[in-house]
Length: 269
Image 1 (cartoon, one colour):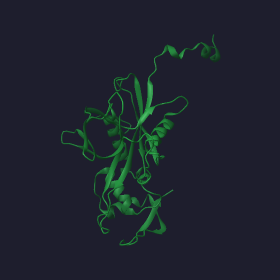
Image 2: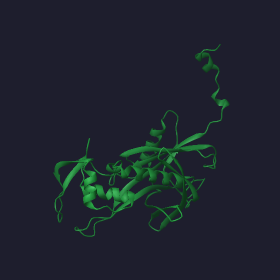
Image 3: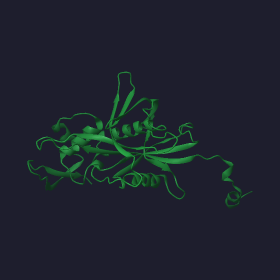
Image 4: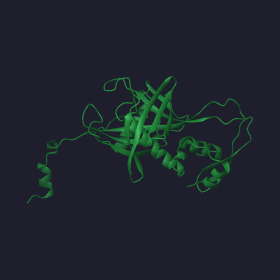
């Protein structure tokens, strides 16, 4: 009877077909418009980083940044490498949202994707060597009366419209089937929808939203982040009551001409 060493000596991994593996990253940032008046809060928009593909398949289509797993690296380090190459920054947070394994998802062959959601803080993006065709698209994600989800991504004159149907969920994670891809490459519309669903779920529980902000922030800034992600408006008094459990005061205040100083907070340890 073989022992383990003998078994491994004769084991042939090449006897089994193996998929290629990629990491795809839905990198989100909340961008604020320039203030038209010092009395008015700037508008906040949830944005997603997309890359225009330079080669086949899906040449000239927009896609999530990502790439193939290289020998000797983990899938997490692959995702971080790819997003660093596209933005030249290390994300504030990165989280696996799911595995996308449909056999026909990539026309090049059997390729499965580990999909991640990543958060990048505004003001840190410098642009990497591979980012000439990278652009930030403003995001809208809404459900219609028929229950279908409409994903709208806008950059300047370019608008991508995808339509998706929510599939049964397991362990609180939503899956989506693509009705219309909106000219997004591969199954990236479904990955984006899953990432947005996960981000909204966490934002509602006061998770993830702190990663969009600097270490210290005002409660108004925190509220704008949550409202922007969830696409809702909340009364300030109600928000402050809920936020009290998750934040603590500092001894610092904002400063700036035309603005009344506001107390700065930080996330509770």
